[in-house]
Structures are given as structure tokens and as C-alpha cells.
Image 1 (cartoon, rainbow, N blue to C red):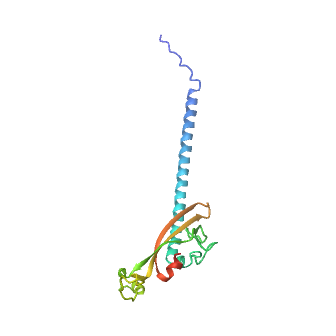
Image 2 (cartoon, rainbow, N blue to C red; image 1 turned 60 degrees about the vertical axis):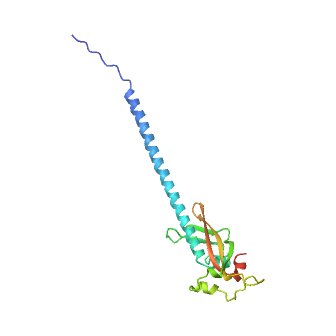
Length: 190
């Protein structure tokens, strides 16, 4: 007769292994949830930043397309949002302002350079308005300098966009060149 041995009792080892596997699977699920949540927050922040940059560019375009920034740099905006050099922008189209864009510091003139008469294209009306009717008297003290009636002024414009919900800010800097009458160059670009 063959004798069969009774197997030894497991004493709960299967239960312990199942609990360890359950804990590991729970940790994996929580980690993937947290990673997904972090990625969603990152994407949301990038969208808010892009919206603020777009709002700053919108205000810069409005500023550059208007002569007020070099005529009165202290009060550029025609419809200010709080102070004279700010504008409120609705970026999502819901009717409420989401981003406040402020031109700070005020637009500043960097330099002025007179335009020489020989650089003008007299076929263009803007250049004809700058032309000077003077005789050529080269080498004579106090004679004409060869400058036209217009100058190119270079301006530096900073727009700071602030999200009105979370107060995050982004700054956009734009340089622009503007033709101004030489007589106004001293006042437009001190």
C-alpha cells in the first residue's frame, strides 16, 4: 500500500499575496489618476497663458494702429480699464473681461533719426509730404543739411497681461517705428 502525505496547510499565504497585489494595483491606479490630473492642470495653464499673450498682442495692435501712443503716451487707451494705459479683454467671448492688459511702463521713444531727402520716393504721397524745396548749397555754413521734413522715431511698448481669475501675468514687448514730422519729433520723442 502506498501512503499519501497530507499537504501542509497554507496558513493564509494566498490571502496575504492577494492583499499585496490589491495594494499594488490601488497604488498604480492612484498614480495614473494623479498624473492625468497634473497633465490637465499643465494644459489648462498653457491655455490661460496663450490667452493672456493673445490679449496682450491684441492691445499692442490697437496701440500701434493709433497715433495716441506717441502723441500722448500717458493716456493711450480710448476705453481704459481702471487706468489710462490699460484695457480689459474678453478672451472667451462670454461678455466678461478675463484679462487686464496694461501698458507699463508707458510707451517710450528710443530714438529719432531724420530722413534724408535723397531717401524719399517722390512718387509716394507720404514721401512728397516730407520733401523740402531748398536749393543746394553744400559747404556753406548754416546751409541745408539734406534732411527732409520727416523723421523716423523708434518706440518701445511693453504690455503686461494679468489674468483676472488667478492673477498670473505675462509681458509682451513690441518695437515700432513711426514717421513723425521733424517739428513734432522733439515733443513726440523727448
